[in-house]
Length: 445
RNA sequence: UCCUCGGUAGCUCAAUUGGCAGAGCGGUCGGCUGUUAACCGAUUGGUUGUAGGUUCAAGUCCUACCCGAGGAGCCA
Image 1: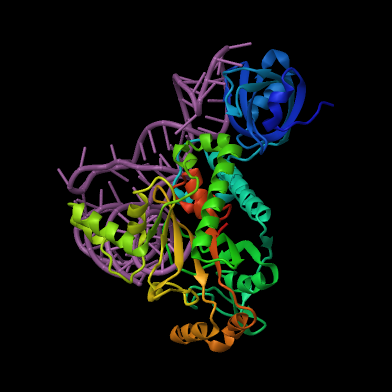
Image 2 (image 1 turned 120 degrees about the horizontal axis):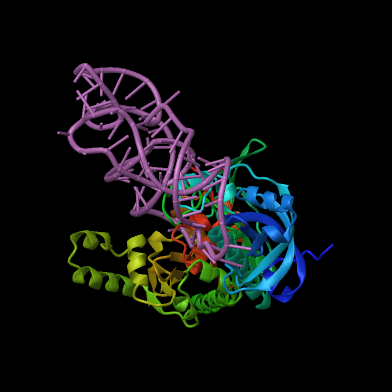
């Protein structure tokens, strides 16, 4: 009985005879020679079966293997620069092979497939090398998020998913029947975190959030993961410093730990290497000026129309994309008009029409990955805003209550995991950054 | 909800003016001792999204519907 090893550790076993358990990813037969590309979840290795090296029934079994058949192979590890795989450069000279299950004809071939077909087969697509690499990057991003927050005094205190009222209006909420009462799947944990900071100072929640937006774009899921830090005694400037340190750490950690996966994904990492503090900061007003200048410069009437925006409106995707093209790092845009942001944001001192809000826009057109703000700390102003937004006062009475017992300036933000992973991996569509993405018209599988 | 594009073999696509529904890949069988999405030969494969309509004749034209993709709005 030889030792069972993981393919990712194969370089430590050169010259040894080992056993690998996995699946057949690809096979090329050459008569008396069979090349099996085997993956085990940690990597991919080429196993070579020579007719003269194995019993006839083993060679016959190797020849008949179908794509995705599960198998256990034993052989000597050899260094060979011709060997493909992950990490690659090593191969197994097979001495024994046991077929666990001969797979049925596998629908996903190494050739091209359409989006609908791949999504219908997401349960199988997840095995493909690109998807494998993205999921490994995602896991590292999540680990880095937790490590940074845990190491900087934040306490993880998760917030409920079933909630009685809206965070930001009721139009984009999924309703759930709660013993006859309507409740909603949470679209943010922020309001609860604002309570939690008065116990723990710096907190974060991390979990799935739900938005019933009928959005059909490459940046939207109806279920996505969001990490939401919230900090007591923190104003907007402090918040931006936290965000840039946090995001830079996540990117740099991933570059180091998932270099091989990013290479497999053919991600050009030179832009990511520049993601270090400080990030450029521009105000909403400055952003409008820049967009205006761009509109002047362009000859295309179409683009001119796309870039059109009046003071008081939120940016659309074209605006965000054009703005981020001006920088090689993520860029902060702060001080959005009060009218286009949520009710709980602190007004700018001396400019009530402007809020102390800040979005972080990722480069290369990946758009908004963070939305954050300083929150209103005065109970009377908050009550006034709740009235102005026609929100049910009784549902928010506990929230206003927080401002009556030692209210302090506080701020927080939410970072979308899937958008961040899409940016870091260079993935065109957010659907590939979630194992089983939930989208408009898509809840299967 | 709106705009644009699309739906033909298991998959990716082609089919000229309305005139016999085709190719590659996959599968199957055979060959090959260094393949990298191998190669060579043979073979298998169809309710052209659905329902109507026009026509001698419809994948192709018309109507309605269904499904999908990209985008807008909204947002992380």
